[in-house]
Image (cartoon, rainbow, N blue to C red; front, side):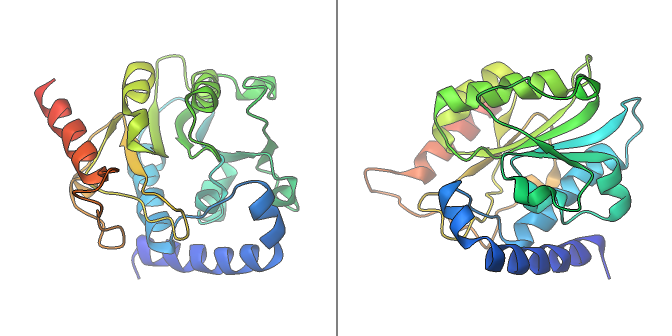
Length: 226
């Protein structure tokens, strides 16, 4: 069985258990979850860029407000990663949990500063103000020479993410069931996986006032020309 298949099964089991026990918390904290297939794809990206690459960082990956990805990893991968989240229920029995409040972007254990090769981010809110706080946290956590970022948010934040983290959107779109709008996926690296559409997340809305397809296409063309 491939690592992606194993990860998808682990993710599906975690999602089922977590959602059953934390329905009210999910609503209070504005939590939405990637599909199991999207979790598997993003975890494989982290593996390619981080776990399977040589680097001198103390830790591999910081999962900022992305617990579904962290808990889909193998125990060995989790041991070299951290999940940073406001929901303390996620930390029960998990030594890799670090409480994180985006209102205090760098109020974190000193040992985490500059310790990571990779940061994955999916904030609970899409506003520029919230994203700037997460960006500050990402810079605080990444190794001094830079690192890898994997981000999901609305396409309207493309300019901010390109300017601050060098991240650009891809054809692949994350599937987030129950989210009322479509997210794009941004990274500061290229990947053949991300050049292919995700069949779980078809682009719709062409011709309407909110034309996600047109906005994504414009960003991809601008990226190709830059």
